Every structure is written in structure tokens, then in C-alpha cells.
Amino acid sequence: MSESVVLAAQEGAVLTITLNRPEKINAFNDAMATELLAALDRGAADTSVRAIVICGAGRGFSSGQDLEAFMKLQMPGATRVSVAEHLRKGYNKLVMRIRTIEKPIVASLGGIAAGVGLSIALACDLRIAGDDAQLTLGFAKIGLIPDGGASFMLPLLAGFGRGLELAMLSDRIDAAEAHRLGLVNRVVPAASLVSETAAFARRFAEVSPIAAGLTKRAFNEAIMPQFAAWLDREADMQEEAALGGDLMEGVGAFLQKRKPVFAAR
Image (cartoon, rainbow, N blue to C red; front, side, top):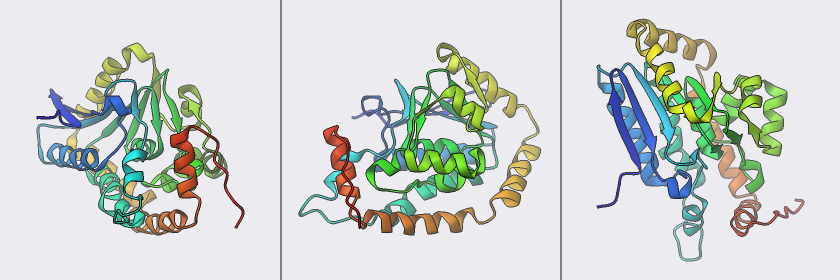
């Protein structure tokens, strides 16, 4: 039997959920998205869990969508999967679950956090990064827009101008710059990221669960009451981008390790 692509372990009141495809730098496929949602549901339902950590196994948090798996769905003879429906059935459910679980959720970022992997981290309540962390959206490099809620969360956290720059240019930033922009709460030595994350999460697990849950709800309703509707609109725009002609060139260039050539239209 193959090992689960998402692991969950509880210590005290903190549940740690680990993305577990280290050979792919925890790139998301359908199985990992499904198992992560199930693990979040279990954590939400368990009253002994007071805080949740999401981290990645191996040398990165997540490299984003598994593009090799995606390309198989676009090959001749394959039944094309609507990008919008793919988002609605997978990543949009994930980020909405993260936002609606009334418990603190901490993303622990070591190594690379890219694409929808970064989107999921940005949807969490708090982020702690190792000093080896590298963050990049990457969507523009394959002809897409930031999805998984990143088109909302990035300008909310980093501001409009800097967020737009990061989204359009897909620059890779280090942990120190991410902290300066407000994308992560704390930066710690990479060697102690696990222990520092556990200590950070325990602090949130020790506060009143009623107060923590209602505070999260209050922030959601004050700042992002239309988040669910925005995710739906974001999915429509991603579908438009996917049909625009640049996606296949972008993904092909990425897999072939060359610079994409996007045609003017």
C-alpha cells in the first residue's frame, strides 16, 4: 500500500498536517488536495485540537500544482478538464475550509512555496518561515493568474502595488523580504523551523478557543466577507486565461526548462 500523500499527527492541542510528496517537492495532485481537505475536516471536528499547522515534507513546503499531472489531462484523446471547475472542486474548497475553521491555522514554510502552494499558505491565518524559505507565485510564467485565493490575499497582505508586481513578474523573494512585506509573521533559522513552529502554534492553542474562533470569524467578516464569491470569479478568470492560448506554451516551456515565448494577441 502506498504511503499517504498527507500525514497528520497531534501533539497536545496542536495538529500538524504534513504535505507528503517530497519527491515532487509536495506538488499538488488531486489526491493530495482531497487528503488535505479531509485532514482539515478532522481537525475542525476534533475538540481536542486547538491549533493546526500545515507544513511540507522534505526540502520545500509545496512547489504548487503538479504540472506533469496537469499536462496529461490536456493531451490528445484526454477529456479536457475545465480549469474553473478544477479550482471550484479542489483548491477553492481547500482555502475556504482554511478560512472557515474557527481555529488558528499556521503555515510552516521551509524551502520553496510556489504557485498554489503559496496560495494555500497565504490563506492560512499565520505564517512562520525558515530563513531558507523562497516564495514565488509563478502563475504569470505559464500564462495564468494567481488562483487559490492568491489574487485576494496577496494585495491584502502585501499591498496593491507590490502585490501586483509579485503577481505579474513572479519574482522569487526570500524569507526576509516576505517578512518585510507582511507575507510571513516570523522568520526563524531553518534548522529550528519545526521546533519554533510548534512553540508558535502552542501559544495560539493556549488562548480561549471561543475567543480565537470568534476573532477569526470577526476578521473574516470585517475584511473579506465576499471571499467565497471572489473565489468563484477568480475561477472564471483563470478559465479565460487558460483558454487564451498561452497556457500550453507556458507549461511546455516550464517542463522543457526554457523561456516561454508568448505571442501578442
